[in-house]
Amino acid sequence: MDFWQHIYDNFDPIAFTVFSFPLHWYGMMYVLALVSALYVAKNIVTRDKLPLEQKQLDDYFIYIEIGIILGARLGYILFYDSNTSYYLVHPWQIFNPFNTDGEFVGIRGMSYHGAVIGWFLGSLYYHKRHPKVSFGVIMDVVALAVPIGYMFGRIGNFLNKELIGRATDMPWGIYVDGVLRHPSQLYEAILEGLVVFLVIFAYRRYKRFNGELILVYGFVYGLMRFTAEFWRQPDVQLGFLFGGWLTMGQILSAMMMAVAVILWFYFNNKFSKAKQ
Image (cartoon, rainbow, N blue to C red; front, side, top):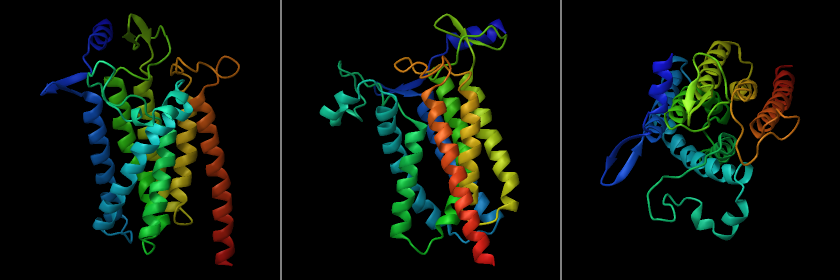
């Protein structure tokens, strides 16, 4: 285990440099996440013979990718960044990839829950522009595609040495700045990625109405994220918000679970009445 621990401690998050611009492993994994999510989506559409054309799916992914990037960055500033007031005065700095010395460092600070809001708004806008495409069917496809892409995203966090875990004495821990920590990014990749996908993939045959799978995703992801937060180090600028254990990620995940449950009861009741 010592070999594994020290390999990670000396791992370089920068894969290589092109014309003085560093390309991070995280960026490469982000691209892989998008490609894999699109691949899974197209595979599910074909496998389950869903009423979606490949062109419609390609167009939809363009809409939501813009929403995800905007939402993830703005969500981080609103939920996690201690300098929110600075960005209100200097909004052009929100997507500035250079530091004060002019060095390219990429865009730092992205929020998953902000990305969810951006994705949903992008989805609504797409549906408004293409009302003939079933919104519920698209939501079900997203529920199956996102977890696999998310898994690669968390592996990217691991390779980028960010969103680190809490201190531990477990033999599979990793050294981060000389402190042995849980590889919580990998825990999240498994729990919030692989496990969520397997649950939804197995449940899809039993869905009662179109759009149900995205609600199942919201609940199961929220549960897995809430659990994983017990191994993840809370953001240094926020720390624990209550009782020495509750984190911002857990609050947002609990809200996500609650919304998913409320919407499930609403739409399930609506579906049941329609069948009567």
